[in-house]
Image (cartoon, rainbow, N blue to C red; front, top):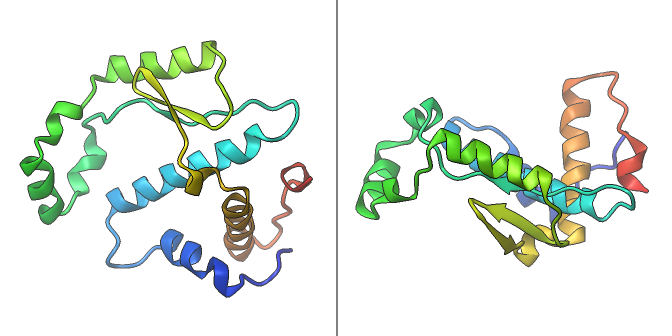
Length: 151
């Protein structure tokens, strides 16, 4: 279904492959990177408007898996000051849906920011789509990718 992953995409494969040394928090952060890349990719397709939303860092049960080393780092930089209330995070998502946006932007709390070039790079997005399809195809034998994403 997909071509073999070239060595140029090996770094993406390593980044998104689970390993015993990868915490749930790191996997979550990587999934947010993939979501932002997918939003940029979809936003380029005529008739589709997509935007990645960072509603704010909300203290949930997901953060209970953060390593002790990372907890010390977050405590040192007083990361709790960046936490949002669940209600504020939900409001940010709703406002993003209700309002338009400029291409290559994302919503971060109440502000719109420019997406870094590494994330908005069309080639990186294509590489991620190919890798995603290969990973899904290896897990689901009857997987057929949606061709709209490749037109």
